[in-house]
Amino acid sequence: MHFLSKRRSCHMSPKRKAAVDILAALANTPLAFVIDCLLKGEFAPAPEKPVVEGEEVIGELTSLEKAILTAASKIAESNNLMAKEVKDKGEEPDMSIFKQNKTNYNALDKLMWACIRHRLGAQAYESVGLAIRADFKIIHYAPKNTSGSILGMFMGDPWMNMAADIMAAMAGEGGKKRFCNSCPLYEECDSPEKEPRI
Image (cartoon, rainbow, N blue to C red; front, side, top):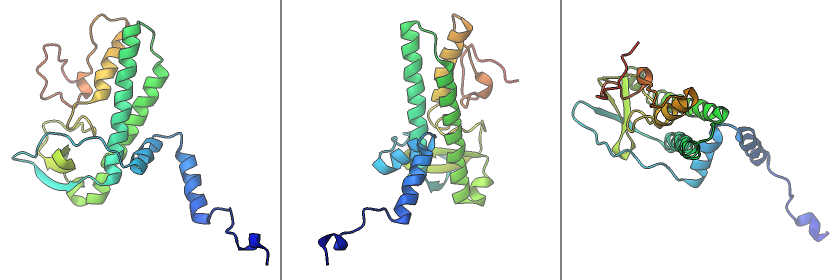
């Protein structure tokens, strides 16, 4: 028997090939960020806000949900950095990149809450106010505001920070344009520039 006949085949197993095909198919989607976070095991830090009276812990984020949160956070940070660079250089922003990032952020936001509600079932579906707290605890509460984005629920919405600057720059306005109507922190805001909800 020839020594080459005992060597393992260089071909991938069907399962491994399917996994490689799936990764390749997801390469240019927002899910590529999620997979990267899962593979590296690197997640955004948990919010610092603790569970308080009137909030009930109904679960904790899974690794997948932490990866989605992290991916959305990275997209928001990227937008904020790009917005700052554009503003600092006095250049016209490439709105297609910002729009793509906003679409990706929104898709991950919806996926995050869909995963949580699917996993936790009726308890999460029946709760209007869900939020993430310290140690990645998922809580429900009687909401002042029901807009609920993953980051907006506990950190303020980073997309909104960046979007206000970019949209104002595009409109040629000297001041910052407000997006009060869709801001997750609307009820808590005491800015004199706060616009009434439509």
